[in-house]
Length: 126
Image (tube, helix red, strand yellow):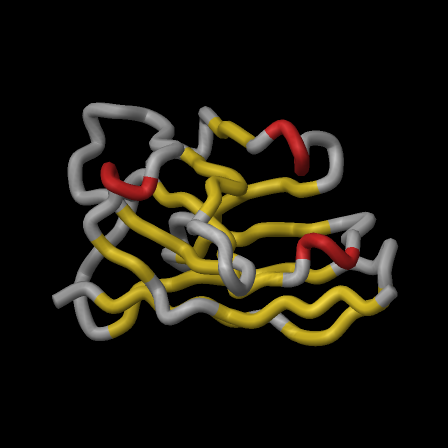
């Protein structure tokens, strides 16, 4: 069973930055499409960013374009989400997700992912 471990969340002031990391634990799972989603209390899980297995293609939600950057280091088998200019309304639990099938480069919907991390809390104070 693949287990994705997300880390790097915390408390940050508005306009601040955080970098989230996601890596698999306990199972070989590498070079697969990955994504980041977030969920606030009372809301559904929403797409944030996605990256292809090679890192050559990326996709972003319109609300984070220009401020967030998804990247990966396949040598370290880790995916990152650099978040800049954070806003209080972006307070949420952030989840990383992985997909086994590589035939689709970037995946932006929850139902297309096979594995999910436990989530890491990001709190943006105003």
